[in-house]
Length: 78
Image (cartoon, rainbow, N blue to C red):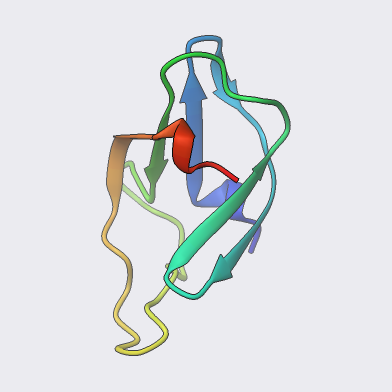
């Protein structure tokens, strides 16, 4: 399932499309269509009916917890 179905990225100019995603060790890496402008947030599995199947931890196989408008620290972006 495409990562864009689970994640929503927003910045000062609105929604940012997600081109691709991958999981690298304990991180989810999202490739965005454009560079972020100003303050930005990411949300995962929000709403009253999140899509299934959810992403799961590779060690415990427990689903990731949903989150809403978590601040993106741009200095950590690759």
